[in-house]
Image (tube, rainbow, N blue to C red):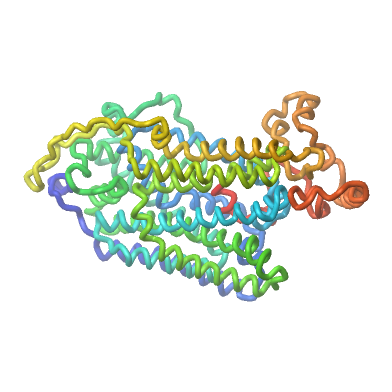
Length: 588
């Protein structure tokens, strides 16, 4: 780019061109076209399995790409570079957690839901605890997803509008309508294939930004050295690990954060008045380094909104599934015909999409997009993960422990989250420099004002808890309180539980332990029985047990409908026909 054309030199931001708007429009048209295509192709298939689960026979590749796109929303694309610029490279470590998350999902959580043949993962809570626990879990998930989708829809539009002048509500409404359109018409198949298309757009946009940013820095090595000199690099390079899938986009965003810092290392855009929030840094950076090439900023816009579309469409589909299975079919219309269920699912997508559009403005009150998202996930998703973990790994837990653990964790985490938002105790940030700003085209540089540290009470210390620790805190709170209440109110006897509802944790995580020790760690549950018998023998066994035992009740539903439940199989799943809705599992 010609000298003197960067924002920190001119005090102005480059604007979008017609070509950029056209490219953004083409992305929306292609996404809508995929939905229309599957609406026409599958117009004669009017069952909920086809609409909500894509028929259960999708190829693993689009499913995997959809999972990746659902995880890596516009929140990640905008928030991660800002996190790296504002703080340090410690955020790299979050990628390491993905290894453990994927392992736990594949070998501990998903196989249980798969073998139980549930459409909604919250059906498990009814089998394990009670219908009330299932309903409470479903409602918590619905609230979480609606807030999350509102953030995903509004935040990128706000950031781009503030920096580039890209129309705020025009982009919110356009993205919302297109997403509702193809999700309603094409169902899960359209969601999966549009996600696969959008992940390609995301990768192109990120790679374009990283490559051009590295060129402007004189090579990525120079950018890394600049970050290291400023104290932003806080770990040894030997810790670099190469994780596939989710880590690719996360680390691309982190690397973009490094070159972004190198570009603005002598003129902090927020101090200079070019942006007001950290979420606007990446759009500003793109306009600086790509603005001279017509069309490339448009690719970036398509990249950001592809992330938004993928998350919202998957969220709408999963919400429709949960409400249909856990509310309508249980409390309103138990014997709902398949064709009517499909139509109700489509209506639910429309209504939920409209609700998200209506609530989009609330996201502006939640602060930075990355922190807001992780805070919401921690305050709502953390207790839910704790509830499922309580049921899967602790056979003594009963429904009263489940109720109390979930509600207590929700109250505790909202107390911390709201308190942190009210008091706003400052977090330590990396150093910034404004010596390279062109103050001739802006107001005089601000005079630093020393701020006395706030005195905190013992309770207020909780408000300084990092939002990245919300989920772990919530899980621990749910499990501890849930177990204490379970033992206080009469714990569940492990031998009375259906072993298929409990995960043999030590058999999977420590398979090298002697069988005698592992059997002792079953805590009275006979995991051998679910592997030694065929479904037919299980049916007869269930009948015999029914003659001599009282029914445990809906609390545990011990051995109920055992003929419809497969044995626990921790091996990677080859088929997709019985996997419950994707977003329900991933957002735990």
